[in-house]
Image 1 (tube, rainbow, N blue to C red):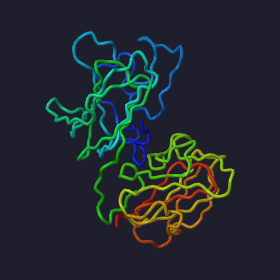
Image 2 (cartoon, rainbow, N blue to C red):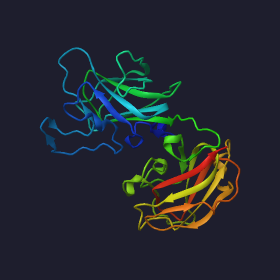
Image 3 (cartoon, rainbow, N blue to C red):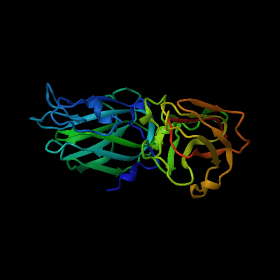
Image 4 (cartoon, one colour):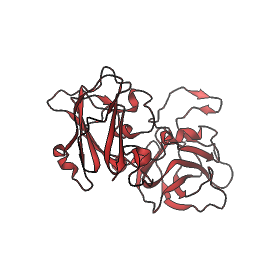
Length: 320
């Protein structure tokens, strides 16, 4: 089981992008909205509500008529889907034996009856209390996904890994490091406390867990993260946001850049576009005049000295 299916992509079903569950045939035991909760699913012993055992996911009642249940996710931003994860953690005697996933393109919040759904994941066996990663591909940006479960039961989480599809015009000034514009996480040396993809997430960080944070470094050197910009461009303003990071913000940072086709294996030697800068706790640091002249870059490497947490990275630039 390759749980690295998510590597290099973002979760298109993330509510931070505006994604939502717009329909479910039934969610008697567990609310459909929990299916795309960004948090890891939990099990709370002894927790019950008026319908029975509280479960962290989407769970339909036991079906007593022919057919099967389904749930529809509207993606906040249309995108190319490259991976799926169906997560049944904590569902043991109540998980669906099989599931399939379809996708469509629709301007409606809930696709109409005449919508054309295409198969993304054919009917596939599921196991209880487990995670099933699947490599898939759409040939154009999807707007909706439909999770079919056979015949009923509970699923903890559905993750939809891919890239937002957005046309950026040459010369347009945009945040090239934004998920909603097509930016992607590439790699980092450590993400012990917070995921790299959080750096590119929309909006303000909700708390310290909603950023990228490394472990405490006990050896020489510094930590780093590489991101792929939505499109190659010339950077005019960089924002390093350490919101919520107070006793664990990086002392300093510098940023390197590289053009399309550059090898990330050689990122340590990429040209510097932002020289070393002092950082402070729980602050939004804006750099413009400090940025060095550079050719259009497709990748940025954020170096934090020596370690710590950054809530968001913004790179306002013009598509070149």
